[in-house]
Length: 425
Ligand SMILES: *Cc1c(COP(=O)(O)O)cnc(C)c1O
Image (cartoon, rainbow, N blue to C red; front, top):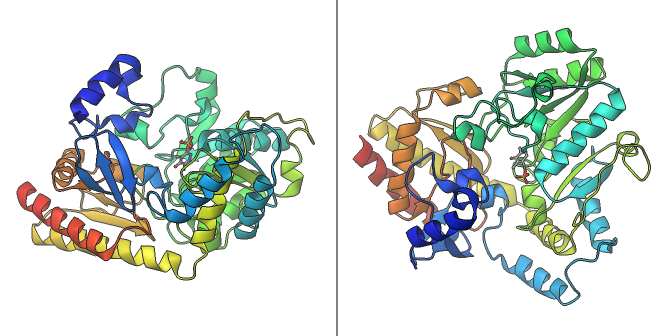
């Protein structure tokens, strides 16, 4: 069995051979590998090649693959069945843990994907304010709901698509997009549209155009302006929640958004996401209120079990310090090797999350990220792959370090980077 053969077969039945566009490796050239197994920080493909994995299922696998606590919790739960379509105590248990970590989420709902969480949060914001427009930031990705696809990050940035076809113009008209970290543009947009804006949605550490770092005071200003105009502030913490810190970016920055979206990590490798906020907002949702939102597999018991086991593992003292230190080592290695080979490289890092951009930088917004030399990134990706390292298959996706990455994995990766840069320079 070869990767090529798997891809050919897949393309006969699945559009593009993949179930999410970035997986096609279209942005970096070559063809995807097909995975048979993950163990710790390593993925193995159908040809028996091993890769140190910095994609970690797009951030979901913060504990690495096949974490013993998750596997045993899931095995135990499977004995009782898989899905019931009725409430289980597990949902309450995970909700309790999330509310303790995110005090802004006094009430919440579980859904099956980040896309759904964001769609639902926006619906609540619109119902609460009676307004329609949404303000978002250039390069942010908030899932694939129609009105959030303009100037979006992730796969759209990867494939150079400014907006998706199939989105009616009047949907796009309700979405205003401004550059991240630009206080003037923010003040102007809010001043101009304050009577029409239902919400501002932001990834506090945008991680779908590569990683951007919020400038000092920017998100505080955003919180102050939205509060003043009674515009709902939605923090999309689908990546940053339980990643940057146990309580997400809002804990790190001491900012209380009105609504928060979580996903990825909280399902422990299964489909689960959540949105939530204070009681008054969330009581607008059915059955208590007039905002409809539902889901056949919402609060899926196996995903809840995996989420609970994951959060427990994240509570170990020093967890976040340790993975941040691992990432720091790798980031230092990238910077040193780039310097050594005179390759212009800017690396943005926040905890276990980072992005190397092939540009002198600084990279503080999407426009700067797009100035990165994506052909150089593609070369790095392919050379690393040859050396057994799986980097994100796009300049515009962040790298994730998990607690399963060992000091030895990091050393091996830095050696692979050295070999790659040597060939590139
Ligand atoms: C991944 C992601 C989403 C969408 O989540 P899905 O589960 O892929 O639908 C939304 N927002 C952000 C910030 C994300 O990174």
